[in-house]
Length: 278
Picture (cartoon, one colour):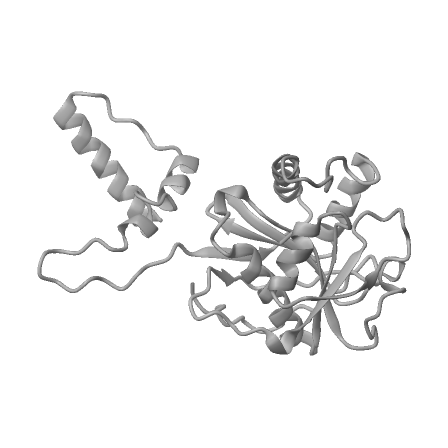
């Protein structure tokens, strides 16, 4: 990103010289945006070659996924992704997240708890939150007790898998779902990845089923809005050949809830091979 920012500074200097206009100063956020811009960023520059030379090997913007601590900044980032998704969903024929469930205070408390116990991960593009997922190694009994799943099987549970609209179409949500499953298998032998999906969002049910998930019951509490239960065998997930993000080392955590218990790697991670919604 630093190289891209230097390129842009040089570009604007030449532009100012040629056209007699003042050279704009790039802020940190603007540099971050330009680094991932389809024209100015790495993705846009990757096919640039000199005449007579073979095309350079494609480059992909490097995103980073990191365990998020319970800070005000991380809480704001996750809530911002939720709000962005909520406004986008208004025109999609679903009432998902139309209002915080059951209210703002309890919704925000759940999000904060996920951060405090080390269960929430954020994918970063510079200083911009590109996606998030909260993971658990045990089922919430209030949600999964009436399912058709074998809850004795080790599984990883994905919650609040959300992708920023700025990264829609990248396949980031699908890869983040797969990363969650593979991480669960790597850390404690998870055989399944499971999600509870908004009950009335049939399009989202279809999305997960196209990704290999199968319905496995309904939450026994009819008042719980995310009651469609689905699961997928982790054995059907393959590591991507050109991944979108790399993983930073996780830190130890203290689990405040029995179903918020993701296992943490205690060795330096291998990079996820190069390069979420309830």
